[in-house]
Image 1 (cartoon, rainbow, N blue to C red):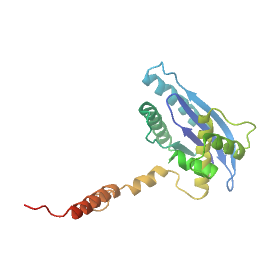
Image 2: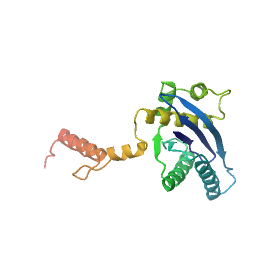
Image 3: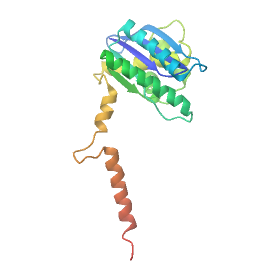
Image 4: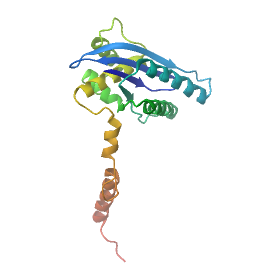
Length: 202
């Protein structure tokens, strides 16, 4: 099974492709880092990265995509770029019927190195070893993309869902009463707080 890992970004977008074999074996196929200039317009940059992703999807025809999940950072501009390219990936994948799985950076680190707070250098070293590469993939975006692909290959090898964001959507789905689990927890917390305060005197 061919898996593409994508470390999304507007300035640099890492693409790593592996083939999953029996057990936990994975074989290297391709890696590259797509780039766009900050001097170009936002629309031009999104189109440039999106067109390159489209080329890779059609050229390699993967059976699954592993995409880094957007998470909060101090750099809002960076988060926006990641979110925009993530949306492009999901759009292109849906067009082609390719399931997309989302992973947080800590999930990937934990799978590849056994430690969720591993340094980037440790991730790169393990990716190099697992894929039996002659040299470490550079820059870090390239290693991160391959690590995403490896993580998803192992997830599927254990019989996991091909589209992990759907699992999250199910967990967040409204209950028969119309509340999501998060909304229910908030309401219950408010009720407990109200009981602790007790009735106010008139």
